[in-house]
Each structure stands twice: as structure tokens, then as C-alpha cells.
Amino acid sequence: MPLPLDCLGRRRTVLQLGAMLLGVGIGLPAAAGSYADFLHALRNDEVDTLRRLQRQGFDLNTRDEAGQPGLMLALRSDSLRAAGFLIAQPGIDLDALGPTGENALMLAALRGHAGLLRQLIERGAEVNKPGWTPLHYAATHPGPASVEMVELLLEHSAYIDAASPNDSTPLMMAARYGNPASVRLLIDAGADVTLRNQQGLNARDFAAAVERKDLADLINRALRAKLGPATW
Image (cartoon, rainbow, N blue to C red):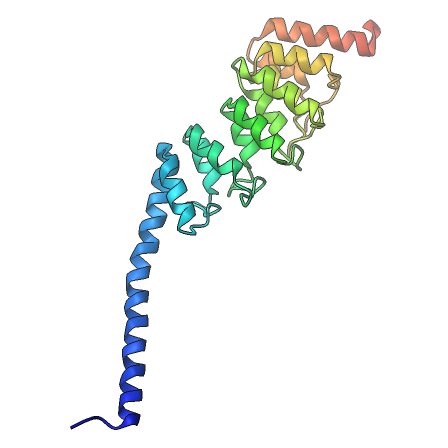
């Protein structure tokens, strides 16, 4: 016996709803799988996976379980090709902050990835920010990349005497942790050697605290040149 038209209509509606519910059921694990693939690709430098996810409409600004933007996860994982791919995408938020207030430019500087630092700046990443800055992080790096990064940031108007939350400057960080050539570069570029942080320490004190005598002497000479010998 054929079904009445109203029954056929209700049956069609039920079938459509069932199909929609099945679609939702299938879509949820697919989304979870895409998220896992995304994190794996970032940690393992898998650019092809990122391209596939992008084609599927996956948001490349997605954050990891700790709230860290994908670009920052790639940088922290030293996945340089993956990071470069993300930086090149027009929709990427280059200035997104992680849970500790760091951004991609800061992480690139901290890990000595001068090429990616340059790419970020060329794509329009903000060089200056309140508190800790990319210049602080570049100055802290002990390797030869530090000089290139410090120079590049200064060329793009990084504030040379930027104050951290406790008023430490890039010169102070370089004096304690960084490449000696970066200390000389910052002094030659006009860093204020007289500044002190909230603990009352200046750059000379930072160098002396870790027995970097040559740097302490260099900063002393810069202090005498600025203040005159009568103050010592």
C-alpha cells in the first residue's frame, strides 16, 4: 500500500535529518584528526601536511593545547620550513601572543632564526611591543646570529633602550647572556649605558655578575665617556 503524501514528506524529512546527523558524527572525528595532523606537522616540519590542511579549509592560526599559536609552536620546535610556510600565508596573525606574552618575532630571535626573523619583519610583524621585546631576545642570544638580528631590528626602528617589566634593557641582557659583538653593536648604536633596572643594576653590573670582565670593562669605558671620570 503506497504511503500518503504527508507520510512521504515526513519520511523524507527524517531521512534528511538522519543524513545531517551522520554528517555531524563523521565530521567531529575528522576535525579532531585534522587538529592532530596540524600539531604533528608543526612539530615535525611537515609542510605538505600543512598545505593539505589549508586546502581543506583548516585555520592555520589554530592554537595548540597550551594556547600557543601554531606559528609559535613551529618556531619552538625548530620546524623552519613549516614556520616559513605559515609566515608566508596572508591570513596568518604574525603578532599573535602566546600564553606567556611572547610572539613569533620574539621566539625567532630567541632561537637564533635570523632568516625567519627577517621574513617576519618583511611581512609586517610589529618590531616594538610593551614589556619584553624582540630586541631583548635577540640581544640575549649567544651565537653569531645575534649580531645580524640586533642589527636588523635596529634598522627597522626597534627601540634600543626598551624596558622590560623590571626595566632591564636589551644592552643589559646582551651584557649577561649575549654575543659580545652584540654588546659592542648596541653601545655603538647609542644604547644608554647609564640606565638601571628596578634592582638598581646597570649593564656593567650584568656583565660583572657573570665574570664577563672584558664586557664590564667595555661598558665602563662607555660610562666614563658619557659621564666623565670625575663620577668614578
